[in-house]
Length: 389
Image (cartoon, rainbow, N blue to C red; front, side, top):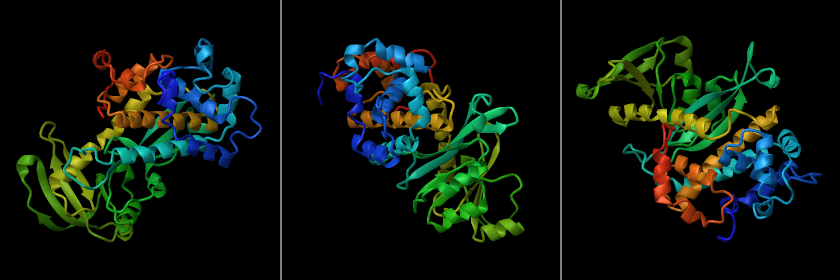
């Protein structure tokens, strides 16, 4: 790697540009484009994510202050806010979704050997969604409620490395359970979900595909006891049962047996009831798997705090999806760089270092391994610092 380049240019060398160019050609992204190609648009929006720019004017001003370094950063002409706004409105968001999925594939391979924190060889995914609020007056296409706009970001998080394996951006009205219809189910994998995904027809489809699910039962579950297995009540377990669904519709949607585990929290004394189609795992592991689902909630909190997906640089559906997909790609890109360079800092620390050094001509390895600086940043304030991988 040429260490005479600014840090931003070195960072962009980790982007799979061949894949990106194929996607641009597939969707005609650069058709009749005279200035600000799709690659330059991506660089400008990635720069905004890395340096916490809040507006198009902000991006234009910051980049214009370094005219001698723009060419080395991949910009052939100065970035104008009107041109960038037009690009966000008109360039197909699927270009950036394809790039994000290519990066996700690389990250999954890199983090495949990461410790899960639970003694399991299976791949474990956590499925959930987060709602991103929008102003209905500015985003009329995103009607969620009578006076509120929103989009939903449905995410399947691979818990080995906390890498998003699947992302779908929908309108705010889409029910969480419908995301199960969009998954490419991996046989043998374990899918951990909350009660919003308890749709027995869809869960049975997971079961028939050879995958396992772990979820919480709804309060109105109607089931018939079949048999029980012994449990160690000192661990908080109350019972471990095999049940058959009794409801007319649910028994037809899921005609097989289901495992029901009742657990009482030692601190809160709250009772939780888990459902799974895996009859081999110890009951304690099933409870631990559901507890690990919280990591997808932390992922949503992390990206909302540290990436720019609350204030959008465009009002069309295409602009919103473009910005979200670029934010996801930047998150995964930093995770890839962290693994490839064998860095010990958290993603938050790396983002902070990058945000103040992107114009510096520092070797990327040395810039991101300044341990004293990293420690000071990681310990500063009360910032959400949830990912240590």
